Length: 151
Image 1 (cartoon, rainbow, N blue to C red):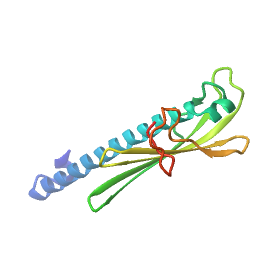
Image 2 (cartoon, helix red, strand yellow; image 1 turned 60 degrees about the vertical axis):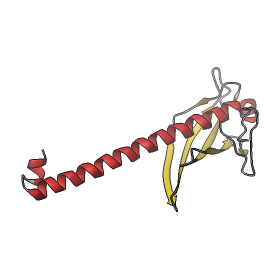
Image 3 (cartoon, rainbow, N blue to C red; image 1 turned 180 degrees about the vertical axis):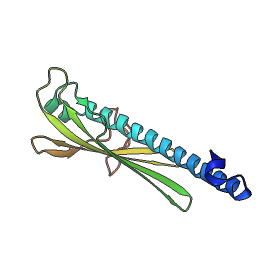
Image 4 (cartoon, helix red, strand yellow; image 1 turned 180 degrees about the horizontal axis):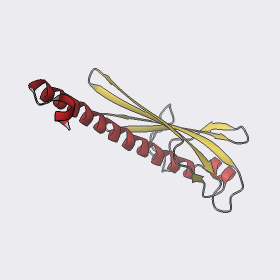
């Protein structure tokens, strides 16, 4: 296929090599973004399931839809890389549900140091909006000013 697109000459080989490198880098970035989105979704669904206010409103076993929206970005400042992932999904009352639902938006940040934090905000269908405690019933931990901790 390379020969058909770029020819058999030196320029064809160089162009094919550049395109292969770019495609490989793009594939790696997309794979990393997908993994980050999954980590964010997993942490957010655990936070929703562990939050007493959500369970009181939706029932003991809320069901979460797959992500309906997601965004991923990364920043590298002075050699310190930070990735941020945002997802949105719906949480609904569990089996035999009560017909209630909540919109959930989660923002996860991870750094090159391996740290991970998540901010989860819930909007109930009655209009109440609140941030979930990042301790999320996971035994506390260092919540910090932003309500931190890993789920």
